[in-house]
Structure formats: structure tokens, C-alpha cells
Image (cartoon, rainbow, N blue to C red):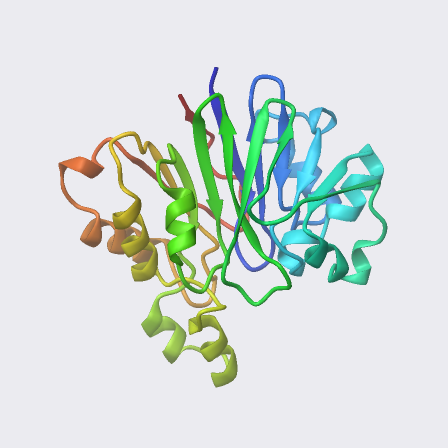
Length: 260
């Protein structure tokens, strides 16, 4: 049976990934408001009332804005690390149920198994995930300043990948951000550039990779055409032709993707 996924939003104003098997539906990050999350879920294959859990990568507002509202309204458990829990913004409020996990640990929600691993980002205890459904694997890994060997090891062999392509270096350095913010974005605890992401994908390529979503684009320091140009430049050749590339957007739901 297939593993389905779809991004409700991706970028600095809010992130949410819907992951679904035939019997289980989970949101990874809930960075939109509760109302907007529900509105966008209505545009997907999912039903809000069918969600079984919310899973959190880290505590930044663009990943947790709606987690409290949705948890309380639908009685959903929230899976997160202790470091993330302790640093949640006060605006999140209470959670209906808390399920703690540690990086390096696997946990199961319905028939989906989540393998959590540490990432390099300026948050308390940030993680990425490999979601496994009967051997089909989806890697979810945005908000990382560098692709460590651990990240590459954990994402190896995934059939689908959601990875960030946050910025174009020239747009960033010539853009309006103050210098300290530019340095933070470029640091090992910031975000990957388009080139960084393409180099990561080169390292992760294997014959069973089928779908790649380029996510978390900066609206100020990147453009979809620059991402597409970088992909076309770095990831050329017949080995890449079976792979579907999707560039995720901030203000609209992405295409639905199915992994065999």
C-alpha cells in the first residue's frame, strides 16, 4: 500500500507536511495557524478529523504556530523532544497529550514508524525524520545549516525526500537582511543554500529514489526558478530522469506525492 505525502506550506511563514498511509494520517510540523491548517487540509486527500497525531521537528514559530490549537481542538497527541517542549513559545499554550522521544529513537504512530535524528540548526534540540511504512521510506529534513554525516547516513536509501533549498547565496548577500542575520543563515546552524542541497542530493542518489521536494525557500533570498536552474545544472544525466522534483510553496498546497 502506498505512502502519501503533501506539503500544506513551506517557508519562513509556516511549515506543515501531511504524511499518510491507508490507515494513518500525521502532520509533521504545524507552523500555520490552526484555522489556516484546517483550510489547507481541506484541499488535500486528508480529513482533519482523521489526523492521529502531530509531530514536531523543533520549536521555531514557523513550525509550531498551530500545534496547540489543533492538539486541543482534536485531542491529538504531540510528539516532540524534551528540549523542544521546554522551549515552545508561550503562545502555543497547552497540549492535549505529550509524547516525548529522543533523537536516535524510533516511535510508531499507527502503521508509520518515525526514525528521529539530530540536525544542525539554531534550536534547542532539532530533529529530522525518516518515516517508514512497510519498507517505503520518506526523509523529512529541513532547517539545517549543514548536512552532517549523520544526516546523510539517516537519509540514505529513502524513496522520497523533503529537503530544504533555502537561499541563493548571491541574493542573500546582496539582499536587505542585516549582516548578522545573513551570517546566521549561512552558518552551520542556519539553512542550506541551493548548491548545498544539490550536493546533498548527489550524495543521496540511489536507483530507488523517486520523489524529491525542495522546501523552505526564502521568499526574500530565493526563487523557484533559481532552484530549478540549480537542480538542472547539478543533477543532470539519465540517472536523475526517473525522479520527480517538486518545488514547495509558502502560500499554496504542494502537489500530492505517492511512494510505492
